[in-house]
Length: 529
Image (cartoon, rainbow, N blue to C red; front, side, top):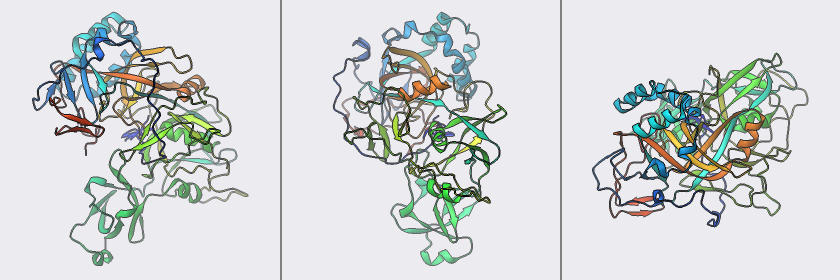
């Protein structure tokens, strides 16, 4: 969930955070983008894919009136519901509980949403026809395209892992699942001075405040600390920098290796599990279940991340190329499709693990993590996982159903997705057209955007929640398909400004147009630079 700031890492931007979050990414590995695909489109070309002329600039757009509007990252084009592939065939009763769950949050987001959600309570939730009619009356459909106006993007999958564990330390349960550390401090990256020098700062509660106008000579004063800006990672999705105190210095929070080899004495241990690799996968997924020897299930969700960049070790094919293509763009991680990937069987062996669209190398070491205050005879420190990023969890009080995503509601298997909240606001209905992993059959259904994560970046980008259990894990690991998205906006909702006629578009966005970054800049959901 890409919890996930789900946030995935599936950082919930709670989860980003939890995502926001979510897990928050920086540069990984750079590989050339794949050649343009010559595969047939997911659906036949219809009038819906023909771009209408841009609307005249109005200083703002209203859903249901504007034919086309844009943000820095995406273009939204109005289409009729009959032009959305698979719309007439979907069983909307399966998505209805997820939508009503979103309404519990959305009805506090303004009159448009309150009115829509109030009327939703009067709909027969068992009637697909009644639900379809409700969406067609209350919403307008807009196809999402990226900043080059390309309709195709990437759809991956995630799931809720389950790991054997115990509340107490003892073989084979030797890997601690940590809660959020009490010594973690935060500073808004946007409030940091530019450059790479050293500045004075003070600590107020959990927050770090840069003291402008002070020189390095003042840093010895009581209550002041030295913050070296050159050591800071600024491009986290939620714009938060995670720090710790070291004497009179403020340093980036501990890396995975430091946490695993030295322990995290300022973090509560929620449980101990039997597999470092399974714990790492749970961190990437952003949530999970820990099954105790008694049979009791402890559900955990994303709480925080250490602020270090997400740098997974990508498994390589026999020719030396990465099995799963990843490229860097704009300081963030972007997943690309790699045709010819030979790991599409979903099989897990001792060398690779497929998760959230990445084929990751498994660690070769399997030593015990040193637990603070304990000595383990013959233990090998560390897990062998080189990724410096690390996710901390909290016990989840989620009711029956899926884990709680970044939007704060339980996820629905098969109907919840994780998205980039800049282009697809959390809580909104999104129709997804993609292919079923393995069979390649069309998978076209209404989903609800209820999660996010650090790896979920881009306008036409979705991470499909498959639920829990072995089948869900298999499907999620195999899921990496091209897809198209249509967002449903309540009629009358004010959104991003209208596209400017004649604006020149480049890979970085429109030129000569003062476009917003976010479709709906709701505080705490979309982080706008």
